[in-house]
Length: 267
Image (tube, rainbow, N blue to C red; front, side, top):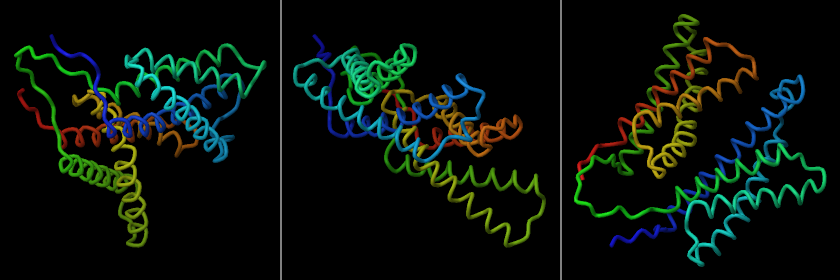
């Protein structure tokens, strides 16, 4: 009989906690945008501030700290299934909402908040635990990577992003003066290398440990990240051509990262 008890180690726990903190904060900011746009005729990009973003991140930290403490107890008790962490996440979200809002809670918003928290609980479980594969004797293809290939992939993706941006800038603005070229070059380098190694690296790690290792995973995520960044740069103004270009460039960079990082191994 095969042992089907999920395995856990500190590395997976750390990756899971960091990934969920970042993902939960991003979802919180996006929900803020959606609520503002749905409840009033306002542009959320005009009222968003660093204080609001910091408060959203703080709320994610408080939620994750409480979830982590209850998760530790549940793990020791042998409660290691996905629905346990999902339930803990939703329960903590409800508790924090009641604590902060009291009797003034909005049922619809509370339900959405709990659903997001349950999803984050599932993501944390999926990143932290590994289910032992049954020994069936079947041979299947698996995508594997190494630390060196991941670094090479992120460097390659950054280089492709820089090259694509400079090519597009040249097509749009024509030949630039050396000083202007140096300023744009420096900003583009910081944007792509910083963005790819932070957002791209976290996304790659999350998809890898979840098990989404096909080409379309990083391709779609890369496009979505650049689409959100494009909206932020435009401050909510929708420019279809610009957004299509940045989303396409993000997808290409995501595909390059996937292609360089992985090798298909027959097991």
